[in-house]
Amino acid sequence: MGEAAASPRHLIQPEGFQLSIKLTQLSHGGGCGCKIAPAVLESILSTAREKMVFPHLMVGAETSDDAAVYKLNDQQAIVATTDFFMPIVDDAFDFGRIAATNALSDIYAMGGTPIMALAIVGMPVNVLPVETIRDILQGGESVCHAAGIPIAGGHSIDSPEPIYGLVGLGVVHPDKLKRNCDAQAGDVLVLGKGLGVGILAQAMKKGVLDDAGYQALIASTTKLNTVGARLADLPGVHALTDVTGFGLLGHLLEISKGAKLAARIDIDKVPVIAEARPYAEQGYGPGAIERNQASFGHAVTFAEGVPEWQRRLLADPQTSGGLLVSVAAEHAQAVLAAFHAEGFDYAAIVGGLETGEPGISVG
Image (cartoon, rainbow, N blue to C red; front, side):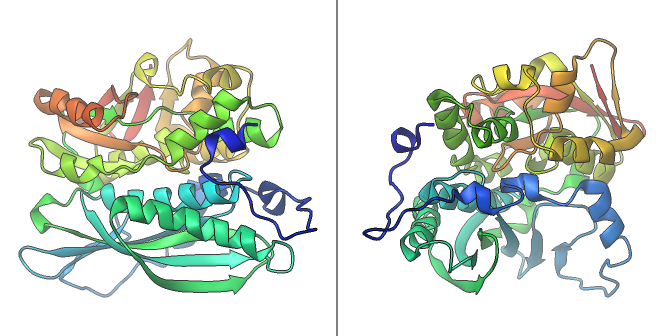
């Protein structure tokens, strides 16, 4: 499947040791496809919301945003997030890179800049060789190095399934913070990466993904969403989120509900990773697609003629997916230019927001 060509490192094994179990075989799910379905999560959290008032807590759990934000003073707020999951690929170094990229994305999605991270490590130490575990951690370190931040500590446990991720800490100016609930009627929606990560990952797990598909998977999931901090400086940008485990529909619903607006997706404008499209059309995709679809209920409606593969694609869990931007229509081209300047070639306008009941129409 091309791991050697796509990866900067190989798995390192002790002399005489044969690694017969692939990383993805040690976990019941991989990447952001491991997330609890949106409806189930809402049921769990519905009675567990924070009741105490903290005046400096700018963002908590109430708007389903990507990170918590605490105001320190008029110039600085701390952005805090955590994200971890089980392997989505078998190459240990790539797994570490993907998990770290995904975790830091939450800070960029708030308009912030990361300053440091802590590692979250759970490994079956009697199953995986130390060198493989070390490769996972080094993959995460390489991403943090690219982001210009240290991994300043962390916590590790012996667990039956491999788990890796980060606690990410960042800073943002309080006036540049981007929350889901701040989207406005008349905004257009810009998506920064193509969809299809979950589909590619399942094709890989089934042994049918070719080398080009694997390289496309790695290229998308290890591209840092550093453009988020730049977008926060642009006029007309009202809300940001990153598209991950709930798929494009699930994360757009969070913006729709937070801002109390109706959303629209123009299906033919939604970018798809070129290598993922053939697998999508053949029906590949993780079980999380169906769990996500079941969670949307009547909040999502499709026009007649939208093919099944595109309906599923919109619910495909995107591990380390792209930023979704809600921006005033007159400033949309500046947002696209910012994406393209940083190498996000798939960035495109995919829909908009308008006055109406929260929900999404796809046509």
